[in-house]
Length: 317
Length: 323
Image (cartoon, rainbow over all chains, first blue to last red; front, side, top):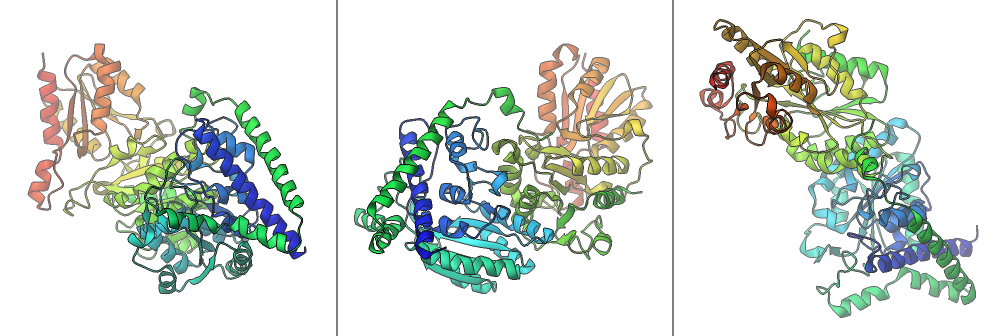
């Protein structure tokens, strides 16, 4: 595959996530999506870069800010919209929502409403992969906000101790909910990894190609060695902690600068400079809009699960 | 066979019949756990089936949950029930909710073994009976066997069950033995057992309380009092039908457990019986549990705060004296 074809694929994948989240934001504002949703706008390059090297048998445990992570792994859009609209056609039949979306068919072990909640799930899944011996791996997506959680320490220790094939993937957006992360964590992830003899890698998320190149190397190494690795990617959080958060706690100049560091705009400029016609990019946009509107309509047509069926879900039989 | 040996036998038999059953816990390997329950299993099944975990309770249960999502059936030893407090996110927010919040896509066939109860003088952080906490959480099953035969059957049933099961082991019972039970009395999840049939009053209990009730029955028989003893065996879901049948016969009831009385298992049962069994009651429902205080280290002080057969006899007589 030529480099340009790959770049166009990644551009489409990132735009798809961005447009889905823009649509989710509008649906949330219109009252069609209840509760909290946490947008990953600005962070799309991480999941897109990583997921290129994951198979359907690899597993991921994702954060509350997990739309990009889930879509990049293969979550069907109609099932995503239906889930977030609380409908039966959602992957979790409308019982989970954005913070608990899961899909067993693609190895998505659930988003999590608990900061750091993804870490032991991925570690446990990595244990299962090791016992299975089939060369699969688990990805623990987490944010810099999880670094101050004790469970992070426990999980990296365990994975290092037992050589579990787990990728600790830190999407560092600099914000721990409503507070700057440097007011929350005095440590350094690189040194933390070193303390456990775990390989550490870092790149800027602005350039999806940089993420992709590093991801290929890292994921290959985890499959080969069955040892955990840490990959930290710095990204920007365009929206608030959740949709509707006006981010009054952020300096407007800093926020504008953050929004200028857009991995999609960055790649778009690169593609145009490479000679790709703007009309080709516009065509991608049109195709994605059509795909998304079809998915939204499928979701809207789905009923809400009956109360009895919901009650029957409490226990497995 | 002792209670502890019965649990070990159930683990061994389950591991032989299903190679996805794995054991996880702190010091469960060479050390065999503080009560010796897993002793010898590392040698028999190897370190890919018996996973000796670092002292990290949150990660212990959290990773067991992750492995359960991926098709394994972990049986986790939480050395003392008190240590489950360190793993409550994994138990309550994650494992208990997964089947529901993921719309039935995943089940969590995980057993959490934990030892509760006092009388071995370990003080306030190694003696708690926290079963009511877990019984309060939709999605969890909670069992507490009172003898070796039930311990075996309930462990096999817990491992086969696709839901997270909190398996409460009473420390004072580990070395007790019981006769094998015939097939029709085999313990199942959700089914209690009439330990002793009687007509004057029902004593509903579980765990160590069953022995207190048996001792009470012998003492009260001298006074011509004929008690019925029900061992709940499963706390969540408890066998309401069995308890109601007993209440319809005796019309009086005492609920006894080692856990602190307030907001406990007895409180739930009493509230339920006051609702659905109101017309069958001829006396107030009495609960007998530990005083509202942590376990004291000093043996004399500890035993003073816990229920025993003497206190149970007194409670029974008081309920019977109600006109």
